[in-house]
Amino acid sequence: MKKIYPLLAVVGSILPYYFFSIFLLECGLDMQLFVELVFANQISTFFAVDLILATSVFYIFLYRENLRVGVKYWWI
Image (cartoon, rainbow, N blue to C red; front, side, top):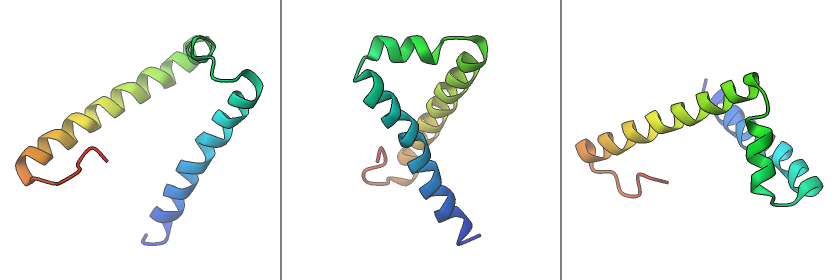
């Protein structure tokens, strides 16, 4: 597991930015188009809402743990 998690972290960091860089090269930094494409259909909306909710829950958990433990730079 010590080798799998770092590998997954690298893949999870590189792969999304690969697709985002393709979008940037084709469309530039058009945020209105980006939001339209993210919510273009029901399945992409499902993934976007799931990601937004999961991230929100994670940051709430992180904030509460910071109050309990006192970690410096917890938002990073």
